[in-house]
Image (cartoon, each protein chain N blue to C red):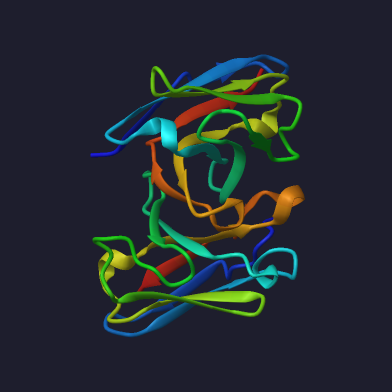
Length: 111
Length: 122
């Protein structure tokens, strides 16, 4: 069982806006620790998508945006495209005892 | 281009040992923390172990504490993970990851290797 909670699956039609949630506790996200997001295509390594809650690495389109509030964080994708179909993971810090923690991942399906 | 190339994975019996290695290139290895993250077949990501830039500080998940040891050689730009007392639950792809951020609390995984598969089975 993952420390951070993500819905197992989310779907949307091309062109739509979808939001992927990531819920933590006062021991991680709620403690003020940053949230980061990764995307993973089948059979490949994860790749950084959002860092520091709402920052995009160079090369990531501005269709992707992150936000954080309280004990939760969200990844929004606008103008959904078929190529966005992948697994998405959130990550934060769980303190000295918890280390770095991940969500269980959300499989995004483009209808 | 920043690259990480893992090696050393394979099939090992329960209770056995394995040593994973990661060769880094394209960035100044000695100034970055590094980590290992694993992914069991069909499952999510799990942070395993991390090491500071100088190698002076190491951190491990409770699930591997006392069994896995992370180390690095900044003169060779390599990161290692010694896996001992392996269990079936350790079966996973192990990723070598460049770890960045202003502090432990804000660290994230910037660059990932392609991974090496460790299978623990009799």
